[in-house]
Length: 441
Image 1 (cartoon, rainbow, N blue to C red):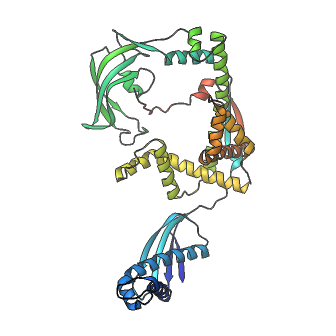
Image 2: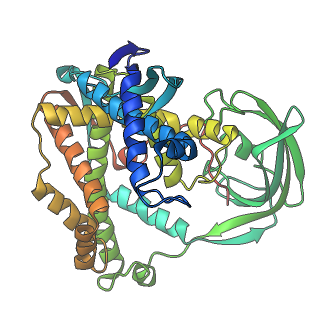
Image 3: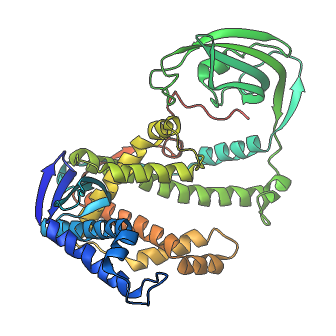
């Protein structure tokens, strides 16, 4: 058997295998002989069917099965001899299947990149420092009041903080576009649930008024089909509504399951939750910087097959239509999910290689601590713990998160760390991209 290997790119390989005709002929002959002993043909006793008749009746089927199995077996032999480990199923392309000639085929696939992570000492981390202040608690109380606001229609011009109900329709070069139309949509002005320029155009309007205007989407807008383009919008305003906020009193506190000390008890409960959130927020900020530093220091080639798998995983998580497999849908999924998928694949490879190289094992005590903290937020913590223990996939996800945290700790011991004074609001509310647009409902 002859084997040759071509390097098509950093990670793509093509293995060409040539199997002697004699080996294929013997495989076919052995199969025909075996079949002749057990096949049933009218007019012949079992085991007495002539080989020529068996070949005439079943020759094509036997040859197909022999070729398929021989390709599978010889490919395994070739990959083993060349020390190659394909990612995903190889793409098999027959080159010569002529009867009486050598069997020849090629297999194209990707392999795992080979690399040694470096540059840990050059990772820069700016660790924020902050504490929960009384003003932060006041702001949280105000947020809770706004969440329980009741809206009352008013007869005046729309202002910041009001909710307006609108119909809108946008076109680009006279053509409608995805997300460019809505009916009876509620928009809280100043909340930036839609583009800021759009919301600003609604300030000063009264119920029943209509307006139209041009709006240019930023070049960095997340939907590439409209990024940088100018849309013409027509808007009709149906109502202007003003928020009425509840008073902060003992009744208000009871809505948050505060049974003792009324408003003071609510403030204490909020402070404890906010302090816990702040610790997790600082940890998340630091982790993002460490991971980004690791990525920047180690640009590695990424297998397309792993990226495609992660794209599909992200699409399923966001309930992307599973059955749609047309080219337009594929391109949309690539556009929406490939950047994040590539980042996750790269980090997964780097973390795995670091854990192996540095012999970092999952700390089962930390896994248990994580599970106890996570389950403590539920009414039946013991039931949640039991569910994790009985659900291997969920437990593996937790173990992967814990290993990530251990890798971050290992990297922080080697990184360049500085501290920066910050606030609860800055840490818990990362700067929004100006291109974000959420549902206005």
